[in-house]
Length: 123
Ligand code: AMP
Image (spheres, rainbow, N blue to C red):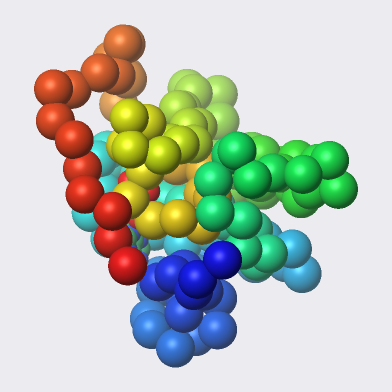
């Protein structure tokens, strides 16, 4: 797959507010937050979409959720709760084609999340 902006963040070629890192996963604040708390948890392995996740990636996908929960506990919003969501392709609202878990917190989340807008893919 082609390189995305998230590969550049992993490689420290562009800045990001990194809040967690281990050998498989990186988490950083979303540049355009949609809630009082909004960060992204990404695998260091570049996987374009949910559709591209292979059986061998099960461990790494699990690590995204484990990291999200650990950060939620550390930042003190685990008990109140949060939204952890991964968008897929155009109808899912995906703009960066390197899978990422959005973690949103700090206010009650609406449901359903549907908005009558389509976002455009980013490089
Ligand atoms: P999605 O639309 O689900 O693909 O989510 C992509 C997310 O990446 C959006 O919420 C963007 O605000 C966020 N984003 C894009 N570029 C950056 C960046 N350089 N640093 C942090 N977040 C970013």
